Length: 344
Image 1 (cartoon, helix red, strand yellow):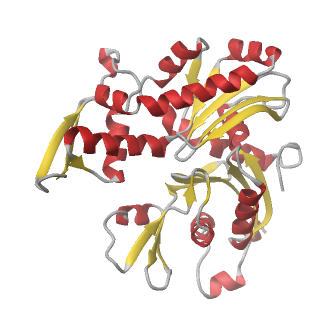
Image 2 (cartoon, helix red, strand yellow; image 1 turned 90 degrees about the horizontal axis):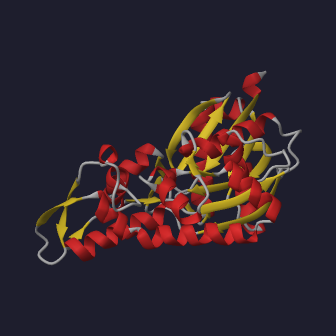
């Protein structure tokens, strides 16, 4: 009977989609699809589609259906979600698919700033993708659960989840989000900063894929790191925007620190605003407990130290921060009858 009812926990992120099933990650792929230009027929999804990004001929195009944490293209999102779910449950096409169609129970993480329209789009896309029993959980709450925090306790905890499209900041206590902010300043903006920097300072034109490689290789928020943490410079190869000749440049982590400083400062400012609105007793809890960092942005070198120095509260990077939301949705999936903060 397990085949006819399957349970999935989904972190539908702007950059990546992660799916848990039976306490295991069974899918972790970029949130991108490739379509035929004339027919909008699905050609590739996830990893395969990402390989096509910026390399597509006129007959194909790639699209990331989520922008700033919410669905920007409904049809593309439905195709992507359906494709990922099919991969996750091993659903076949053709006759097998029409005869054996399991009922799906799904918990899906949504940004803290989601509007009723955003939630309806996610609900409809999930339903069309095969969800018969759907729950939604705000990503900051899921992230806190995934980190290992007991969100039902009368204890204030603060989460800063720096994803691809949004940074989610939340103060959580007694199963509720007491104060929060969801801003469209996150990994994508940092990637854009790097593209602009290479263009303006080195006269080199690069794409988002190369900018992502730079970010992961030498991304830092501090101009000086301990010697043992210093990454080797990254050699960028691109096109000179003036001559169109091939061009190369060696990029250090300190350069990246300078070029993304304004974006990181925006996140710092928003953290301080949320702390200013936090009730005194919960603030005291946060000072004692520290503030947790999750999401891909928390992997930038030196970010916990920079935030700690700025706010004067200890920041800690969660273990495996990229999957904090997905782990939290997985825990929520097991307790849909126990957690009143889940939304249907």
